[in-house]
Length: 214
Image (cartoon, rainbow, N blue to C red; front, side, top):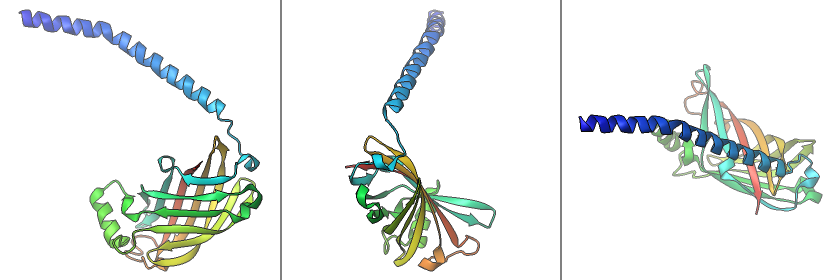
């Protein structure tokens, strides 16, 4: 009986304390939201490229994603995400056409949500023991408003071929700038024609990235 009464007492206390706990969490959430709003307003975010300061910029891997999409049986556009990448560029406002962009992707970091399948793709499809990196190096940059065309060379699977990234400039704030990019290529042109046409030959790259001034 004493044990039953003790359990009942604990349950009553828990019920009494629950509203206070919920109220405290709501208050904390509201405070965090207000702080986030104040921080956003203080950023001074601008899309004016003249506001960008000169210097070296590096990829922020925590706010960058590279996703490759290709048709599977022509029923869906299957997605592969790469979790490990690096790179950067030197920015000179007076010589924007000479921006030298270098990006490196580790194909062994491919992520489909299925670890066993990831290993199979990395080994058989990307042949990571022989080709441990996928790289892109820019050769020319053309700017028209907030749209940018970046011509360069994609080095994939030991083959180097021209590739154009179509980029949207998202803005600049506190030494940080953001971009969205897209490009397409045929994987067979890089010697990766396995499983076609069951898996489509054309691959679309979707890039969301932020660069931080070092």
